[in-house]
Amino acid sequence: MTVGDFWTSLPTKLIGAGALLTDDSGRFLIVEPTYKDHWEIPGGVVESGESPRTGVQRELTEELGLAVPVTDLLVIDWSPPFPDQPGRPDGLMLVFDAGTLTPDQAAGIILPADELRSHRWCTDAEAAPLLSPRLARRMTAAQKARAAGTPSYLEDGA
Image: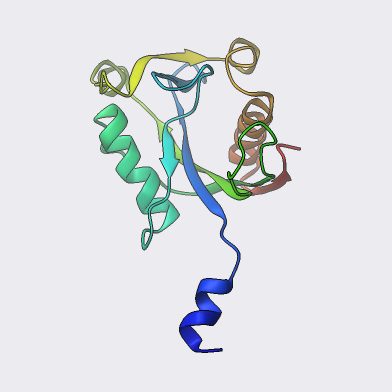
């Protein structure tokens, strides 16, 4: 086996990075994609050769037109393969702290119409019916991790 064969034989994992962005009332931002039937948090798939923090920063700029600092890692969540999505690998979903937006920053959010329909600020209770159950649990954990100053490790959102 060559070194190249060794590297290509290793398992593949999906890495996603999202942001906890809050408003001055403590609600967090969710976005409504045009290509999914449930809401998401700002963020996306980390590209090859890109760090997770850089990936979420890129997504915040692309999806929302925001240039805000992305700081602490709040959650690492192992996500198993989805039975209803053949070929989708398991992965690591990361949530980073992107701080609290001022009213002026929030008013300046610009959505790409081909990717996002809308956005809204939610409490956990308001977000729960809009997010997938695992993402709702992940966001509750992210808020607790921010308050505690300690990241959380989850498996399938728990």
